[in-house]
Image (tube, rainbow, N blue to C red; front, side, top):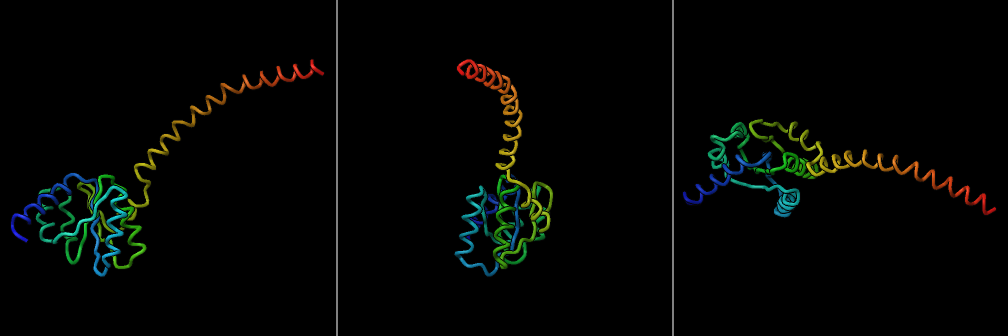
Length: 171
């Protein structure tokens, strides 16, 4: 890799560390190409990305960013999983790690907060942003539905009373 290419990789990684919600660091030694492709595909579907880069370049990119604390994790064959949604990348990484013994989560960073493997697992257990939005919409709709049923109930009762009087008169 030439110097210009290395500069581009370092600047791209610096942008990743500055602009993403969460970064997960994991060892991937022993994964097949098909398994790595599945991880990348799952991460892309969740709105994240997986990047494999030289540890030295990652350490250079980490300098001066909020995520600088994870530079200690950069040893051995490491990959970075990141996403804007702070739940998406940890959720996919933890799910993938449960199915593959060779994929070991080391930790990560969420802004300036350095996460260990247990914290990444805890993040993965939280509901995603879309799930939270769905729950919020459901909570907002519930009172409106109750009000509509309450307002409609007297009218329905009146209709039943008129119907009963009409049936009584017809008989």
